[in-house]
Image (cartoon, rainbow, N blue to C red; front, top):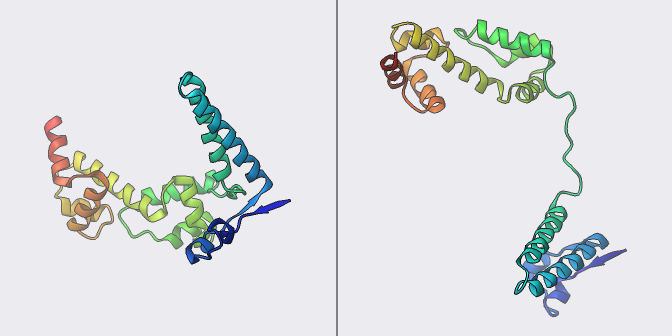
Length: 193
């Protein structure tokens, strides 16, 4: 059994376009929820003057009912087995680590995992938490941090050793990911040591 509310009846017989656009159809479950909410709110109002605990309990139940009703009717479909297999993740991560100083393409990584590029990107993000490009850039910055602490090479050389085009690329990426310039970060670490 379905109960329908019409914008025509709700507006006293007028057909406002905005109201018509927002017309809703309620199921029997929604009508039952509405009566439950009304009953609980009436209890809360009655108890509000004397019993604060009952009032809070009623309001909490109303919130729970409304939250349940506002939840999607169908849970979002989760992909099963969407991430990379452990062996794929190990091989891809090892390839990235070994080749940080060189260009790394999605096609190369997908071939290592034996997947199409589009599926690989989704599976990679499910496994590593970042898309492949973001992961590679983060690893390059981490490698740069390591080199800045271990050597006194200029930032331009460190940028090239990490597969970045130049010092400006390193500085922009470093500032975005770390929150400060590489030279400031390096100076602060040297002063700590």
